[in-house]
Amino acid sequence: MIKALIFDFDGVIIDSESPELQVWQEVFAEHGRELGLDLWADLVGRPRTHFDLYSYFHQHIDPAADIDALRLERRARVITLTEAQPVLPGVQDYLHRASAMGLKVGLASSSSGGHVRGHLARLNLLGYFHATKCFEDTDTHKPEPGPYRAVLDDLGVTADEAVAFEDSTNGVTAAKAAGIFCVAVPNPVTCHLPLDHADHRLESLADESLERILARANGAKPK
Image (cartoon, rainbow, N blue to C red; front, top):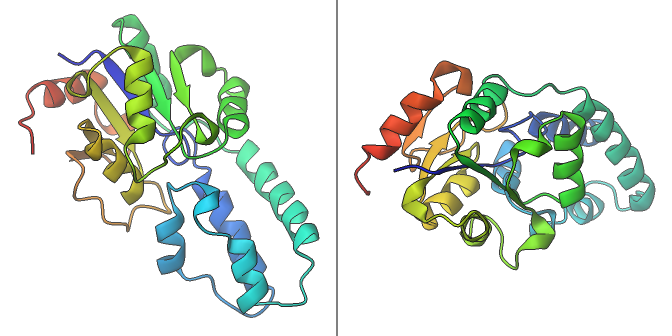
């Protein structure tokens, strides 16, 4: 019986993936170059420490760039765009229904706690979550299962009692490695990534009720 829901944050609760990609693409375009989606695809869902795109830019695009200034300007632009992003369709309904049904709710993210919890507080969603694990809260990160296992421990549930919602290849890999039934809900950035290893796929959480997702998970056979 499913007792808990575990959400990724970026790209699942708000589309913070698109602003990140858009601003980097703008930076590359200013130098007459294109940021390839093949490079970006491997970064989605991973912590920022996995690959230093600023160093890559400095080495391969503009060796004369003032990286400190670029970092400040780019982050300010990303923050402005991200703060304009609404909660993605279906998310609030899932959280309301989970609360009404007595389900525990957790969050597993590769982003910083300030970013994740700050946006959740801004959107009046933080109170729905019983456990949040962000970059600084775990020793390993997606696609490793560590963040999901940490959330399961905090919630006091087993892997077969939870459902995960992810938007990226790395995120789905992490949830499945933890033994959790995973629903892929891609966004415009991740919709072309390989997500076939998820147990179920939705274009939006608004497309299917939470009750139906729970029925799928409760009736699912282990892969």
